[in-house]
Image 1 (cartoon, rainbow, N blue to C red):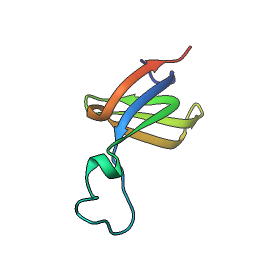
Image 2 (image 1 turned 45 degrees about the vertical axis):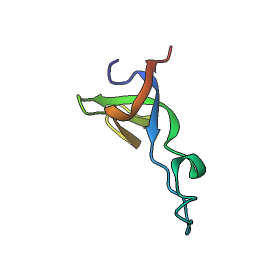
Image 3 (image 1 turned 30 degrees about the horizontal axis):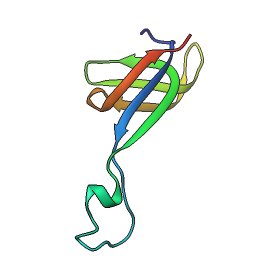
Image 4 (image 1 turned 60 degrees about the vertical axis):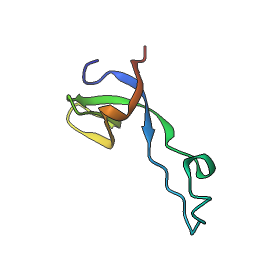
Length: 80
């Protein structure tokens, strides 16, 4: 993958549940666990620790960044 490529990434993300729950209700089985998120965007950069995508790109600027830690990534690929 190189900067400017259109890429798909899928990653495991945390979940937040609003409001009070009884302790016996507050388990991964009943309130869910991590969610799987999908994103498509232009590759801005890739480091040993993360991948950075953007939604819009010009020759000199990028907008609407999504930065995902590599340890959370489940799948990634370049789209043709």
